[in-house]
Length: 492
Ligand SMILES: [Zn+2]
Image 1 (cartoon, rainbow, N blue to C red):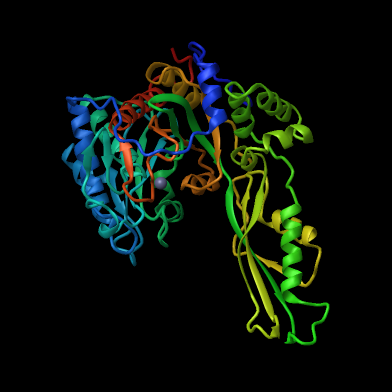
Image 2 (cartoon, rainbow, N blue to C red):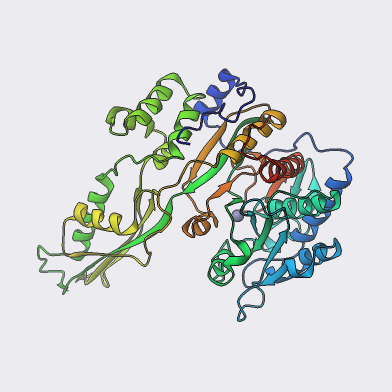
């Protein structure tokens, strides 16, 4: 499916308050600290209470690289599955033998064998949080003013807890999906050398092989307390660093020469600054701009539509590129991020180096960007190197129609029918590792927050209590829809 109009999933078209959307998109309201968030339930259903207990247990196990243990969290969840009657042969805590704190949990929930499994992925590790930097213990789940607080409450222990709670609930309810569901809770997404997804692909592909995966990276955006849009992350740009190096014999700075490492490097960087990569759209970014055009200002909306129709429309490209967030979704970007050179104030520089950080679109490769940078720089004195290899996942395909239809249906029901927008991240999640291995991966969660509100990776990481329970319900229903009977039929 090359076209992901919001109405594709059947059901009513999302009702969009165009004026409100237009205003908010135009203003790009920055993240503001909120004192309180409304909508937290006053009493919990048994399913909500169970999910909260799992969430609390996960948050309170320190899983940060080097000081924490992902294995402890994996074992804690494994114990819950054993207690719930999952056969031991379907529960695996596995990982590299030389990294006992970096083991992953993989649980299989057996279906009727009609179709390849669906993989539910969340990472257990968190970014380090120091007690001294936080007003309260970051590894204690707190609930205050409508927010959950603690390291990992947003990234990514919320999804880990939701998937776990929901699988346990399916089992308790006796629901048998049409196909197997696989839960993988993994290590070292945030850093560290033992990334669980890569390790599982290399060592236990059989355990996690799936038609597609559901992962972090998507979710809903709130305007104030109201849903604005719901994104499905279906592609990622690839992070690649290039080092530019110029070497020179140097000499005394009282007798300068034409050849100079610092000037050569500076010229090269200026050429890169002036170069604009061509617009390259794909089956995720095309529908992104089509959907976003529905809620943007008329002039910008027209430019987005023109660009989808003709990526070589330079006038439209210039207009859309005025917003850096949209600009980065249009094309590969490369920007100088670090610089060093010279060894003494009174000597001609013998070396000068710069780091150029590129975010490469899925339809391009590291080797192609390197060759292009060499052409742009056009100076053999400047040597360009990288440790990155070419990606192997190719151009992203359209979002799986069942996943899209189910997301639209549930967004209509739970989130006021705001637009569902396919998204290409300019950053990275573990999704790209699965996509590289041929497993399409969709970031979709039903977890809503204001832009920047969660402060993931930062101090006082938080998630709205309401958003946690809404996400729990959304994912419960989503998995039932996509793994239920007739998932490719009309979802009504
Ligand atoms: Zn994450």
